[in-house]
Length: 85
Image 1 (cartoon, one colour):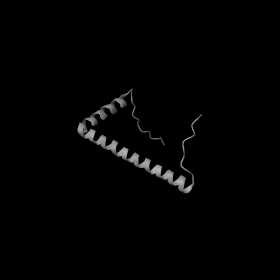
Image 2 (cartoon, one colour):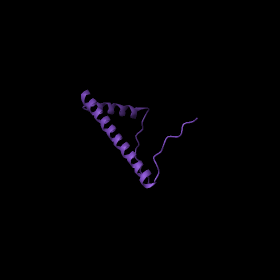
Image 3 (cartoon, rainbow, N blue to C red):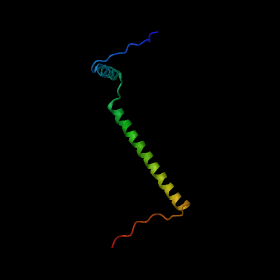
Image 4 (cartoon, rainbow, N blue to C red):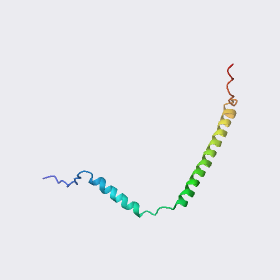
């Protein structure tokens, strides 16, 4: 019996890349983009929420460090090194 072969698509040059770019551009034209005020408002919101979360994590880390060092390990808080003469 002869093995069946399936025809393969032969791409010449950058035809696949060009077609992809054309289809991508076509899809981007269909997108409803937000107006400038919405983009600015949502960007400020993301930055504010990120800053609040960073402050929360920093505070929790500092409290956790003090609890572990003082309570569990019985170590004093670190003091600055003595000044050089």
